[in-house]
Image (cartoon, rainbow, N blue to C red):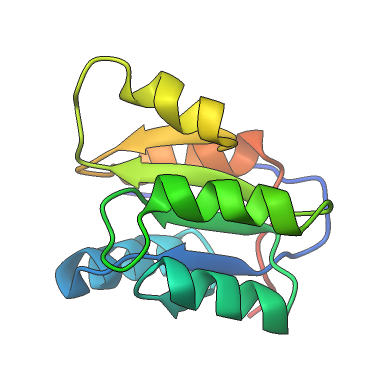
Length: 134
């Protein structure tokens, strides 16, 4: 399957916040197929440390991480950084209202697991995250 999308801004860094190794590998492979590269954070604390070291255009944020979950991490990002990255929730939580909770916490979008490459490409395109040059 081939996914094509048009992007209108310069290449941006992605931070993938995911504690599950298999989910990390699958998401990284999808990003690679779409022409993106990503750094990894395994919990909310690592996300905050990574954002303190460098600028990211987008954080793909798992909600159910240890030490500091994605909701708490997002609130802290929005509190600390005025020019913070786009944040897209990636979660298996399908409870009623979880999308509203994510958006209320400051996330820009929501993708349910199991993530489909078409949904990921659409979200990246909607948030105008451009592909990196190989």
